[in-house]
Amino acid sequence: MPLSECSEPAVSHPISDYDAVTVRLQKSPHDPESWKSLVDLAETSKEPLRIRHTYDALLKQYPNTAAAQLAYVDHLLQKNDYSDAEELLNKYLRTSTSVELWIYYLRYVRQANTGTGPESHETIRNAFNFALDHIGQDRDSGSIWAEYISFLNSTKASSTWDNEQKVDALRKAYHKAIQIPLDNIEDLWRNYGVFETGLDKTAAMNFRQDLTPAYMRARTVLRQLSVHLQGLGTTGDQSKLFIPALPTFSPQERPLIGRWKAYLKWEESNPLEIEEKRTLNSRIQMAYRKAIVRMRYYPEIWFMAYSWNALIGQDEALNILKAGLEANPDSFVLTYAYAELLERAELKKDHRDYAEVHAVYMRFFRVLRAHLTHLTDAAAASESPVEEPIRLDATGTNGISNANANTTEAAPAPAPVTRNHAELIERKQQYSNTWINYMRFARRAQGQHACRDAFRKARSDEYIGWEVYEAAAMSEYRCNLNDGWMVASRIFEIGMKKFATNVAFVLSHLSFLLTVNDEDKARALFEGVIGKFTPQEAKPIWEHWSRSQYQYDDLEAVLELERRMAKVYPNGVFLFSR
Image (cartoon, rainbow, N blue to C red; front, side, top):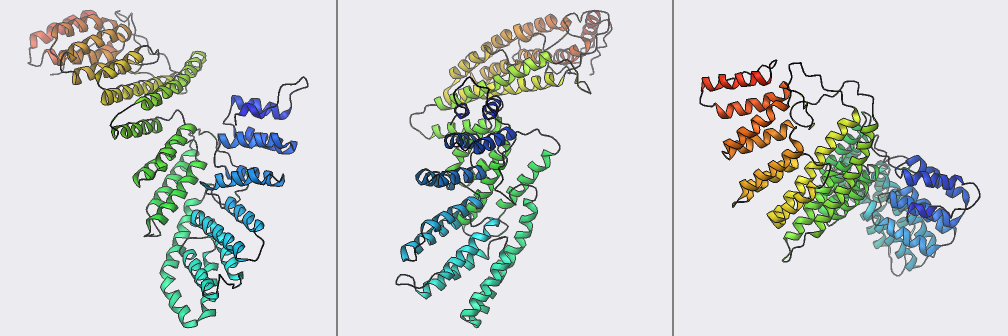
């Protein structure tokens, strides 16, 4: 449900608080406080359609938000809309890790089956088994286990349920529960002792003796688990609406990310020593599902969830990547992983079509370009420098040089770079790397012609850097066995029209010409650009050229070159270290 549909048609009277918050969320859809305000205003209005639209929009933006799911289903049931309520409840329960939601489901089933006949009994028992199969490994599911045991205990014998079956069901439930680190494990262990002793004291001792190691392990793991879960927000009152905020990567957030990663790795290590793969995977899966709900805007958590699912061969891996990219469309790691997954899937087919992989990259370029446009505007409007000015060195990341460097006066110090400028430079480099990855995919999947097509698209993009030209040139040189070096040389020449003042690109071009033994072009390049840089910028170019030309210790030639450089840079010191 689009957020725009939450607001009602424009009318002549002043805009309502609800409409005002809706407009604010259309501009800032990741504002948790505005979402909470919208829910409160919708609930206060008592208007069923508005409430439904609000919860639909909220759960589209933040899927698996348990408190919102509970409130939404409860709202429908209060309006006697049982069909929609049951449909939503079934949908939510498929992936829910909320103990509260499962308790709500069990309560609903029991209220709908108040009869004492065998059919009602079987329906409720199946509902408990269904819930415990999904959520029974959760630390806070102890109340469900206790309620299930209480239900079995209160069940009377019938033609389809005799006392022996009842005892077996109770014993099976106790045996499962006391091997899980539940918050009420000690009460369950004590109640189990009472249950077995009431049947047979001798047998009770044997049963408890056999289960004591598993119980003690679960109790130990419970203490470790409680430490891991501190501060993660997965315990306590989960009925309050929690909406994850965008990360600020502040010092306060870093420990939270570290704690989540440590907890997930701990769960993967199987501290309970569970031998049954299905149970172990279910437990770890539950931990990852909780993590991506709470840490929705942290791509590294999504990538961990994807990697683990892919490792054990779960079909959910692909869905995790898709959902992660919906939440984090600008994530490099998730985009590359998704593109690689699609590419590998195509390799298994007889007739390969990489259109979907191309579409992934095109979408990603649109997202990154939008960010770059925003940063460019912000950098243009920014005037205040950072506390410690960031000065760009001569390695070529800035793409800026002093065209009037051929002077006897000392070059002025580089201007301070604002934070927006620094971020813009970094983002442009990342953007160029994305184009390079795309070109490599095109060549790997569809050949050098596809790589050239990708490079042609890149050249029309205003934000790409010199690295893209270098990558395209070297791809031709290394992969085109016919005229690769000629095509590569042409690409470098085209790049010089745009990056002639970039030290790193000039160095790359010079190195390539020397590699292919094109000394004439290398000398022409060196002599054509060397006077356009400041002494500090020109030094690496001079050193690279001098090393290549005078590797045979031709002292006279070295001195001659130094005399020539002294004329170009009267105040620059260029001494070739032999």
